[in-house]
Length: 467
Picture (cartoon, rainbow, N blue to C red):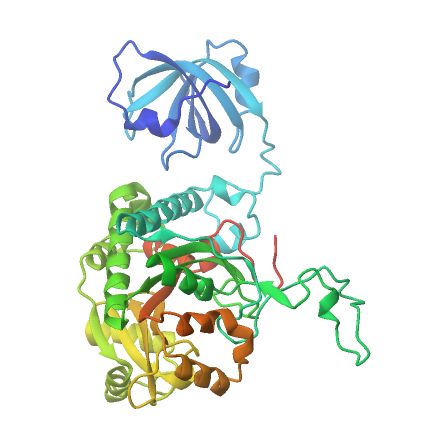
């Protein structure tokens, strides 16, 4: 086994004695500085901490001159030495090296990650190397903590974690923008006498696709287990190149039996507050660094959000407020439109000056499974809107009445026969139930202050790009 002490553990430990203790550390050089006194200082990082560990390499070390010539930004090193209190500023401890081995050379002329500041756009062209930068490291550490916060929130409240399928025949959104899964030769699929593709010969004997949402399957398990949540990858084949969209992303989707829209709204608000508070408690160095690098005021805005009381507006009230504002929005405001990001941010940042939950949207702009309100013009839907982001969560009370749901399917040009299992929930012991969906990458963008969603997922999948 390779002997190794994590740098994060060394930086968090009590100050060592002046005599020092023998340790072995591994990592990559972030920088090397040579003094006139014949000593070199290397900033070593192993990925476990935002901060590096200073390595002091004396000129008396065997082979010092040749060794130093090989240490550059990106060089992988093994260091044996003594951990001692630091004599310089900026760190509490340092390592006085007694042996240094270059375990992975790095040509400084060819290494595409350079010491000078690099744009996020350029780093997107280097997804296999960008994890060496402090900004991406900070974002990914926050992402990891938020993933743990998601599970803690639901597990502590008795929710059951359910793995819904990635390959599915169900179309939750009814929009048709899906990635199809097939074993056919796409250039020459088998066809029937009428010339149509003969799907009966395919692997699943029917058209299937990558899931756009685990909601429909999640509902079936909520109607047996009570409260469940999913947290997994989803896929949408939308030809969108905006900073807010990905073709592959992770979704968090709780579903709750015996729950109405008000209960759904309460859980969603608690969830946002809890995740933000968890990140503030566990990622203080990362958030401070990201505030300095890319998002001034980030920490204060997150603290406000973690303790916020969310405002509540119906869609009709939101439209009235937008119309009264007399703002010249890019997208004109009238009842029946789908709220755009500019509308959502105005409601949060100027009208309510706090996070907002908007409910009871027109049925024409929402999905077939949302419960029809009295009057049959709106549905029991909600969107949770937050500062700097706009919409973060979308959810609804689900339609539990069989006849109403079947009518809504036909109204949306969907074949009820294709949703036989889903409709069975309404035939056998139907109950009020509700849920919501949150794109995990949007939550990471919110907490890290990152503007482009492609920077908060390790390998972004977007139209024309699958690195």
